[in-house]
Image 1 (cartoon, rainbow, N blue to C red):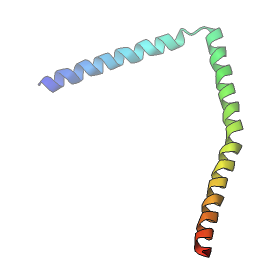
Image 2 (image 1 turned 120 degrees about the vertical axis):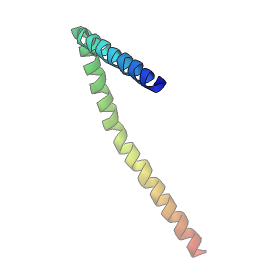
Image 3 (image 1 turned 60 degrees about the vertical axis):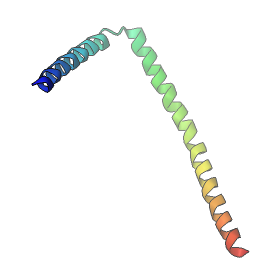
Image 4 (image 1 turned 90 degrees about the horizontal axis):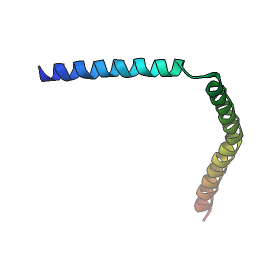
Length: 75
């Protein structure tokens, strides 16, 4: 019985929080929306810049591992 009351309170408070968040999101002004859009575009540009570096570092680690393995077998 006690778990049922806790579940009902949790469900009601969760619903209230979701309704409040959706109202808060709908109340954003255009300046904030534009700012978040610009921030998202900048983040995507940074991700595009990081991928070549990530690939180069990964390939370098693979080559070093293969060299290490080949060098140990040669001796």
